Length: 276
Length: 308
Ligand SMILES: [Zn+2]
Image (cartoon, rainbow over all chains, first blue to last red; front, side, top):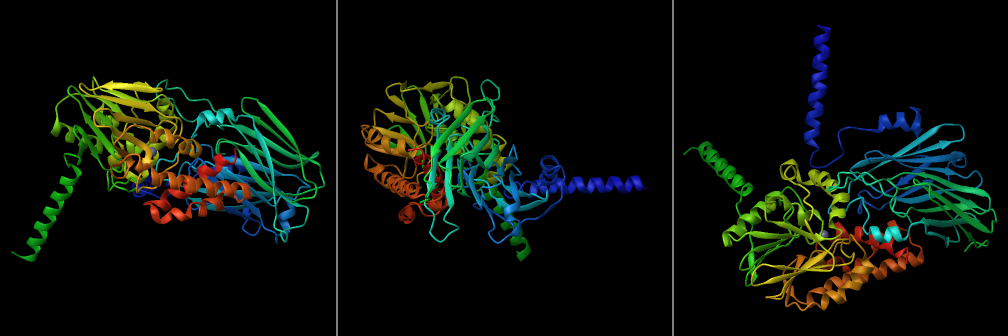
């Protein structure tokens, strides 16, 4: 009798799974929620608080271009915990490689905002998980609809991307006078790299095109770490990071990148110590 | 007759109409010049309601053989196209030319797979299909449903075009020309030398907002070379058949407006998300599907101008 009851419970679960598979075939999220498994795999099943007082995760509601979806992580100015955030992990639940990036914040750089661009393969939840120095995790999430039309999370111009491989650019932006302290900087680092996902099979050879992507990017002002990024294939071609930090008066800004083939790229720029 | 019976009869009629629609035999094609036919796609997004039939399709009939230029957005549309061709001629379909690798232009390929039929495409098309084909099939299953997508096969070209290729249909030749990355990375045009009809694929949009999936700088640069082609008329990838080269004017204006707006966004340091919201706003009233594609075009253009 208990066995029978259990079997019918399984049958009911199976049936509802089948039904829900059908009901969402036209639109909406996949019925299977990968997040619990991702919490286990990426965060070792650690408990998470609601992080909405600490961090904002901004993305468009729809991925306009599947290959280039802007995302901004913003630490809230009012939060006490802000200064204690040591890392932020960005997870795109339904992507083939959900862990998009882990940003480690330099202890003295006071990074308050990070923007980058990601690929979005599907209708998906996106999570940002901030870790504070007390070892606690704080999570926020948003939902992004997949792109329509002929947009794909793939290169638009593979030759041009190859030609840019290894190029690095640094740019400092003017900040509005009244925002933050006078030593707050807003800057951007771009790395020319195809960031190939390696997930596509060549139709003719039936071989997978090998993955080749930037898996680490580190940024310093003089010798003080500002930000380091462990990236994956969910980061768009030509990885691009725009961020705010507080200048320590350094005269140089340095970036080092490494890809999965072991190529190392690095560049150093003189910075305008006075801000802009 | 009771009202219940009347209702019953009406329902049967409706069901018959619906199934007639689903199994409609032929795609509407019109003759735009002697021996040159086109199906004008709807200005819409591909969906289960329209069989994905949103792109223009060309058919050129020579003395010995037929060429098909693009195959539509589903195998159902491809089969209806085949039936429409067969209503005009029983000459063999020797060439199926894909103007590029987007789903609305090549999801119907499977309907034309036959001995003696060559699939013609840009030298970069096999790579584009390898990288994107499966993604397209998965993504359009969501918007078009299993019934339309189950039959779709990614059929890569068997004859590649690098530069120019001349195809002989008997009594008339088609010139297939491969272009640098512009709308996409694998655009070809097809020129019928007899009637001087140009099939431009998605290098030319009218009414339907241009869609950028390649390089905006290269697309703008290529417009002069395109305009120099000695055509009398163009069948664009989307929109009505039009006089050449006047047909390029609206697209050029849009791309130039977008480029200039995005260039100043990049120069001023305005973030990419903000640029996507306002760029080319002056063009909004001039195009259909503006809100479906403009932000995406702006995003793509921004990521290119950043490296200038
Ligand atoms: Zn296209």
